[in-house]
Every structure is written in structure tokens, then in C-alpha cells.
View 1 (spheres, rainbow, N blue to C red):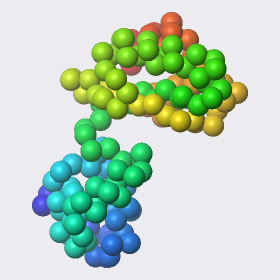
View 2: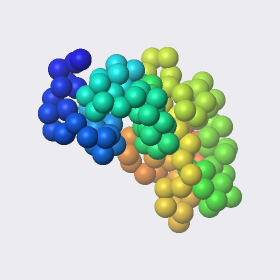
View 3: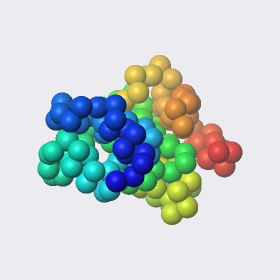
Length: 148
């Protein structure tokens, strides 16, 4: 068990109710939930690895693969869809050579599809590294990806 995981576990009692907060903290520190993390969490909280995967896979916030240094999220909500978010997504796929849910081989970018950011007045919306970019176009997304 890694030192980092031990430090996280020190903050939580060995109760199943702490699974989600532990997962959140592990992902916050490591960027994702590794196989080693799942094994250690299962041992610490005395629950099965399959239970952990079941809970973690239910929530879209958790990742099981290392994310890229820059996370690009493209909104696919109704307002964004009507205003061309699929064209934006297609441009990102073309520029990065990955599909939604994937990470580039060099770990520079990860691409995610999001149901809605709640920024419909700015549609179509892209969020890159937690910064919101509204009224996105194919030209602007291409430029943004080059500048990151």
C-alpha cells in the first residue's frame, strides 16, 4: 500500500459509508482510481473490489484510467447540440485522434462528453481544464487545442 493511500486512509474510519469520500480523495490526489487503489480501499474498508467498482462506475466523476494533463469536455446538451456541439466534438476527435472517454498516448489530453454544463446561454460550450469557453466554433477549438 502506498504512502499516499495510507495518508488518505488516516482521515477516515473503516466504514463502508466512507467509500465515496475515500474515492473522491484518492482521485483528487492521483487523478484517477488505479487498480492498486481499489485493492487497498477494499482491504481498508473491508468491502469487495467488485462493490467498489460498482459504486465508482455508477458515478461519472470517477475515472479508472490515468487522465491527460488537459481535460477537454464538450457539452452535448440540447442547446449545445442544436448549436453545433457535434461539429465541435468531431473537430476535437480529428485534432487529437481520440474518441470521448479516451486519453492521448502522450497523456497530454483527455476527451469527455458531458450531458450539460448548465451554461446554455453560451452554447455550444467546451470546458478545458475547468475553464468555460462559450460560443465555440471549429476554428476556435482548433486554436485552443494548439495553445494548450
